[in-house]
Structure formats: C-alpha cells, structure tokens
Image (cartoon, rainbow, N blue to C red; front, top):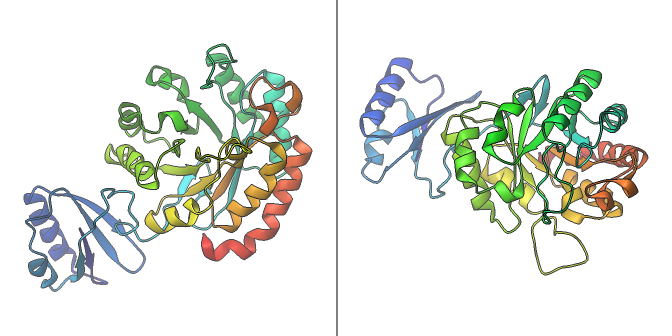
Length: 336
C-alpha cells in the first residue's frame, strides 16, 4: 500500500500518521520527491482502513499495491534512483559504459585495457577476480591477486571498479571494490543477498538464466530489505530454445523494468550473445530501449583470453561501439 501526501503537507500531522501506521505493525518506506512525498507501507495492510487514511487533510490518495516487491517498486518511489559510485552517477538519465576483461589475467593486461576503455568512453572498469565456470577444469580466476591488479588499474585510471563475488567468504576482499556484482547463478542466493544488503555498497544484480522479471525484482528486494538501496539491475540474456547465440538478450526487459522499478537498469550484450560481432548491434538496441548503461567485455587479445574470448571486443572494436552508442543516446532519452 502507498500513501500519497499532499504537497506541503503539515510536518507534524505527517509524523503522527507515520507513528500511527507503525503502531499497526507496518514498516514505512519514505520517498521524498520534488513535488510529492510517498509513504510505502510494508507488511500486512489487509486490516488498514483506506478510507480513514484518505480522509485525512494531508493525504492526497491511498493505493493498494499488488506486486510482492515493495522497496524496488516505482509506485513507492516515483523518481528514478541515482546511485553515486565514487563520483560516477548511474540512473536518472545518465548513461555509463562499464568495460573490461571477463577475467583478470595479469597486472599488465588489466592496466592496459583499463587505459584504453577509459580513453574510448568507459566510465567504470569491470574485471573478474573470481570466475563462475561451468567446468571445474576451466580457469577460475586469480582470486585475491586479481583484486590487487584491479586496484592498480583503479589507481592508474581513476575509474570505479566492478567485480563479481562468488561466495560470502570472499566479502572482506571486496572492501575497496566500488560495485559488487552478483552473477546470474547467484541471483537467488538469498543468504548472500541479505548479507550484501548490510554492506551499503552498490550491488550490480544480474538476472538469472531462467528468472522472470518478478524474480529478479524480488532478489533486489532481499538486498534492499536489509537496508541497502543501491541496487543496479542487469539484463544479461536468458536461456531459451535458440542455439545460435549463447543466450537471448531480452530487450523488452529494459522498458518493463524501468516501468516497474525506480532502480537503474543496465544491459550486458557480451554475455547475452556470446559472439563478439553481435555485441555492438545488441548494445545499440539496449541503449535505444532506455538502458542506463552497458557492460561490455574487452580484451587486448581475445583469441588468447583465458575466459570468454569469443564474446570479447578488441579495444578498437569497443571504440566503434562506444561511438555508435553515444550517437543514438539523444534519441533514446525519453525511454530512460
């Protein structure tokens, strides 16, 4: 349930209303907009008298919400959430490209790619120190050593760093990581999500391989219900019957998520397609559909990459992608 207060509602009356609602066993999520204040009521509202609340002088309207996700719901928070990541803002009309290698392989590799992607338009750097692989015999990442290399790339370029956590035991290693990524396979690791909700660090939450949009938003709800509202949703492709691409990029997910939630939405065309030549056209589609940003995998030698080489762009190809995306952004403003 949401309670919409009138513009310039009396502060004392508003506090009394909040106190009464809390006495009914409800939690209150307050959203202060430019023109209106919204009280989002979380809990069992079945016994709450809507007409009684609506009759109050300070109340504009009262609405029941059917969706099970409350904190992530745009009805509770009409304006876009803007997350400040070490000076880089995502959401609310800004657009960011997060680029870098799938996995950290060496200090030289990471720093060289970081310098190039920043030069060509990236605002954040991504790199995997821990890698979830289908085969236990595949390269699993450099772990703590990889984190150290990422920090050197951050110092060199000044870009905030995004990296994926695999297990809560790794959390102490992420103290200096700017954005913790939760991969598709961990999207419903609810124990992890609740703990990450206590960190107050921005979380990039990827959609699971077969997850519905409601399931993605409910996973975001786990993080937010623990107190962390800095969540970025990521559409990274879902598993369908199609085999010509690694996954199927669900472009419709972007405008749907933007309508359902106030959280920033980014797209990962690299993991969605699995094929380097398809990354640019799908990135353009995601930007045109209103995404707040992109995750792009870039490697200086894709043929020799230890992880996901076939979907990685060269720095030159990334430059072409960024130039194309920035050209269409003015035309996609109304969707973001």
